Amino acid sequence: MWLKPNRALSRRGLRRLIVVLVALVLMTAGLGAWQGNVFAPLFALVESAAVAVALSVAWRAGDRSERITLDASSLEVQSLPGRRRMRFQVYWVRVLLEPGNGRQRLLLSSHGRELEIGSFLAEQERAELSKKLMVLLADFHDQPRK
Image 1 (cartoon, rainbow, N blue to C red):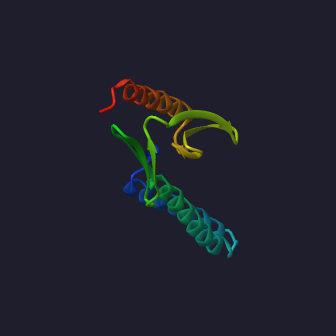
Image 2 (cartoon, one colour):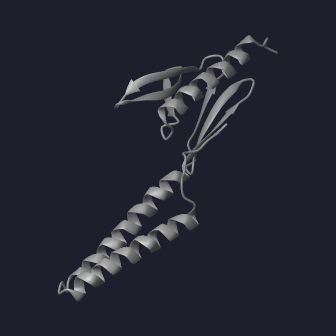
């Protein structure tokens, strides 16, 4: 499985949004300068730069993802773009939905280790993912060992 956050804008869409917002702010600042506020263009440039940086940082946060690989002996979670990997034995891993920080957390637990997965997903998506993982793990538990 490949878990990715929902992203409403493409990179091209983000650039267009920033250009439109900067144009609107600069037009408003130009109108203010025409009416006597000589500092309006300076503040508009600072605000435009801050908004562009904030939107870019928020957009880049959507690049994170998690890849869950399940085979006969292990369940592995790899967090991307980082290199963090965690492996659990299929027969011992438990899928838990626990409340925490005003939302439910989806945890994989085994041998005293816990890993939260899907933190960027919506509540309903986390619940569906937990059910799907429980079904897949149950299928592996029902298979005879080789």
